[in-house]
Length: 494
Image (tube, rainbow, N blue to C red; front, side, top):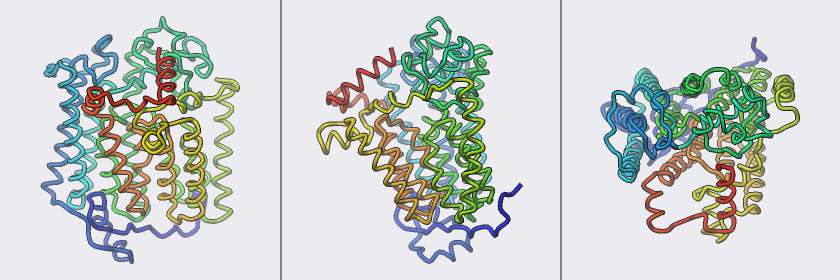
């Protein structure tokens, strides 16, 4: 039932600008909206349908090549695979794809080259998106997701950590917020997991959803998480298209901007991270607000917050979108009503224990923006004081965007960008939090920065870059703060 019967808000048009591939959406805006835009400038760079199909074909081929390399045998691409790599983890391609590259350094270099090719293909696909049909884009997205479903987890072992916490609580009756995976060293999941001494940082709803997986065998639980993650990732892309339509926009560019991003493909989906369990209800809340279902939007957003607290950053901007005091109260009522059973679930399962956000928030990755700024500008790295200042800056950005930015989706995007920039523990797939907001907001600069952040994170996490820094004795954590972080990371992982 609709929460409000008022007249829908007018669609928001995106101003077109010139000069970069990420501005290609200007060329795909629906004609009535483009004409209504008083700030239109020269059209962006565009390519034809043949170039677009070649770009998409390259993305599909490169994705399959990476999945094949991960599946064919133990490698640096799949953590711990040299110690333990059963066939059920490798997937069905393990039996049909030969292992062509065994040297770790060569494989790292080839993977790095393929990732760069994907980045170029991504730019070409965005430049050609106005010449592609929506059907072509949806089919390509579906094919990419099906290919990625066949892959073992790449780069990190987060999937097995999820199962480790689930088995810790549901099978061994130990609270994941007060106990660690090391306390189930006898469990088969232990050998696949990594954060052995880290109490769970995940929200109570996500942990509760994984508890039933402890009651089935590890291979079945593993494939269940993979299926759910890939399905949610596909729903995530479809929601981006749905919201674009609700805004009166052509959905092709926003969908391509998200779904063809190499980080979205090879880190977010192929890593099988739980971010999609948060992002789908977040986008659902945006779609519900646009449909004037304010109470439901607030309730759905709380589901995202109960998976990862990061989602709370969207709440003030849903209030901006509600416009009137009555509608804002409806959003807050929906959030409160949803929060009651979620809090009850939390208390029943975990008592007064809370997710362990404090330890992970003190860890540093060398190329996190806070550490790089602290190292090259201040000469101290990502110190606790600098991290606190960065957190205050995030709050200030949220407040500024709340009061000053009429583009509420863009305001949420700028706030999310500030949040990502403030993180000491920065991973490539975090950019997926930003991509849909940048694609759907009105700010061209936000899209440019989202694209630039994607390029930065893709490059600094390439194996070839890691090899180069090691060979040249470049260590961005050679500061007191960095050494303290490395010591804590070792302790939490062992």
